[in-house]
Amino acid sequence: MSEPTPTTPETPEPPPEARLRRPPRIVLDYPVFDTAQPASDARFWADLLHGVVSRDEPDWHEVTYGNGERLCFQLAPRHASPDWPHGQQQVHLDFVVDPDAVSAAHRHALAVGARLLHPHDESDVGAAESGFIAYADPSGHPFCLCWRQ
Image (cartoon, rainbow, N blue to C red):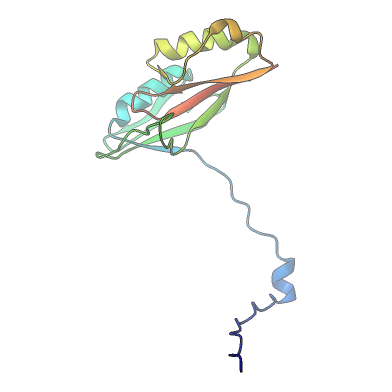
């Protein structure tokens, strides 16, 4: 004699009025970086993005750039820098650059304190239809400058 097969309760069908509802609209307001150095990270990103440090508090800094976009920096005293490309990167930001401006954007990123995360040959920039260069900010948060022809 075989044992009866266990059954799992079926998920009930939602009522018709629930199926007709639209899901709520959810929109990203701004990214927030955890960092042990919110003031210096905010200054770096303001310089990189030609923005301004628009809020400066001990535990919270904001950078406003472009058309009002914001990046925020929250004090995390024990923040551990991501170990990319050798380990996890946690999260990263991609910024699009005009293909004709990649070399200038690359030099600018390095001049304001970015650290290059992988070898880069500037002669490849104009030849590739698309590509990216990976960097880290002063606290180690990775970001990329990307381009498409």
